[in-house]
Length: 168
Image (cartoon, rainbow, N blue to C red; front, side, top):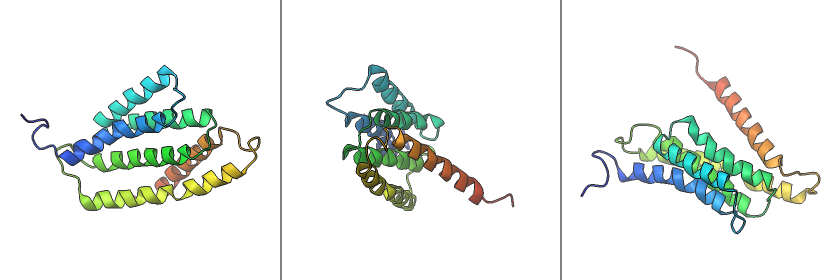
């Protein structure tokens, strides 16, 4: 009995499975506090949609819900570092798997390149975490992480726009 459709590689299936599992695992780190049912359903449904369509903008939804939940609850313990790593890993998996159809095998060089970029994106995470941990809680409100993330995304988009090659 064949589980995968013809031509689909196990690596592509594994990366798509990560798109479902990683955002859910990032939210599961909140346990024993159980997030609201709407939050849980939103992450699971949007992560499943992202796994189905890895190159679609729906991938922003599980990342934003998870980041928003953690930011709204003002948690700045060690779990935030793991959540950040899980969300970056999910983004890298989506980027790699979106380079072609499900029947196209994942190029190892491409996967290594994006993995290295993902690791580089994590460099500021512990530094920022230590800075926030050292601040007075009144001076570092819970929305600080979300504001920092939004600013980083805006700067990355601006940089991508500025360095995009012009028409040849």
